[in-house]
Image (cartoon, rainbow, N blue to C red):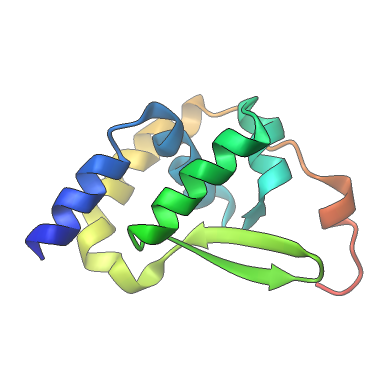
Length: 109
């Protein structure tokens, strides 16, 4: 449990990762292009943050057609509870989702 708390603290020490987590909390599953476009971040930066978040067990990824869709990992609900509560305060400050028309328009969802 101690290691999980330390890993979460490291992840949430970066403002961009906090924004990404808040976006995932608000929207559920989103693809990388939507995170990049919504938060005005580069794809390599977002991918690096998502990799770190996946390694910490905060984020999960699953294929949806040819896209990878990211969401918060519900397996760590207890550990993430206080962080999710804090994310709710960040959500109103996020820009509106810039939907990836290629991903959102796919027929095999």
